Image (cartoon, rainbow, N blue to C red; front, side, top):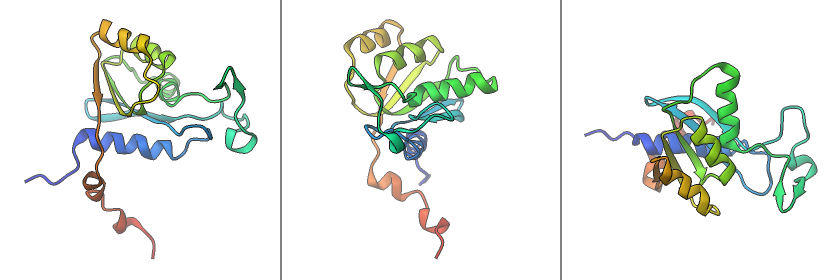
Amino acid sequence: MDNRIKWDQYFMTQAVLLASRSTCERLSVGAVLVRDKRIIAGGYNGSVAGDAHCIDEGCYLVDGHCVRTIHAEMNAILQCAKFGERTDGAEVYVTDFPCLQCTKMLLQAGIKKINYLRNYHNDEYAQKLIKLKNIELNKIELTHEDLTKIPFDSYLSD
């Protein structure tokens, strides 16, 4: 019997780990792009490299949105652009349901499946676009049992 963590939970755990690097004080989000069970990019929400971070100077809010932060999904897509990795046919594992702008970007990048952990202001138009493009949408559940399959203790210092 295979006792390993399932693929969906494995990739979502990676997204959760990436979210721990977030520099936005409002919400920590992580995203992992996967093709053929291989991680091709990851991202978390944070500032443009070299700019101040929200955790250092506070969020830069315009109309209730932090405009300093690049969303996790966008950072993952941009990482693919920077390093020449194609996104067509990939899937995304993201800790929170993508906002409308990220949904549009993911669809234009050729993402075929959106896996998310938590609902977060699920935009009605984003959901309409996902249906229109026949994108598979999958809400992932992470349980305590999933996380106990990861042998953290064997990597910790005394």
